[in-house]
Length: 214
Image (cartoon, rainbow, N blue to C red; front, top):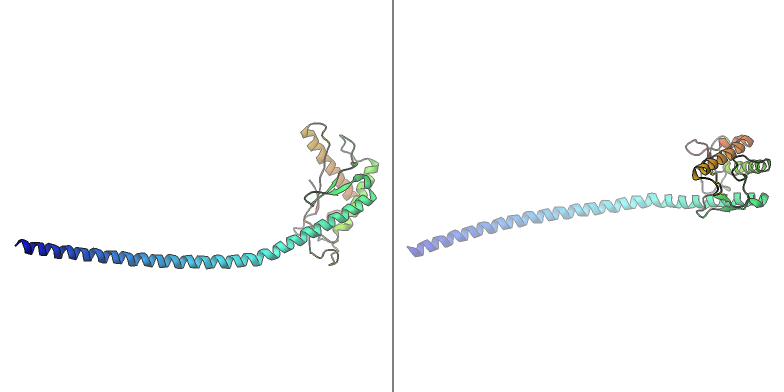
């Protein structure tokens, strides 16, 4: 009858609804499991990040402290050299660079304009500079002449490089001035190591001579 067919359809719809509901419940359970797994993985990652941060802090803090100490020692060494040079050769007007990593001659130069050769008077100055630098490096380098002691280098700073830079005035072309600056640096380097051959015995931690030309 019509009523029986309607009841059968209703039961069928109910059965389908229950089946669909069960499927949705299963999907919900699977989604919750995935969320739990994702949350667990995220928690594990956060814990890993925390541990790495602690390890980084343990490594970086001493390194930062050492770098600060080295910067302080470098500045003190440069100021010491500046004072010694200015005392003996005030016309050179040696000053500390803005970055506090170099000494600059801003007064009377060592070379005549356009010349790559040291005059006899300038040669005497360079030889004295070689003596000052040689004595100062004893406590900041390794090698056969190293003379390290705590009171002169409490930060255990080792000089990696001491570069001689050659400069010119603004006359001439850029190319000729680059060449002239290089020749002047090389001339100064040659005069220094000829007067104090032990300068090349000052080595950095890689076993390379500290004194070089830029």
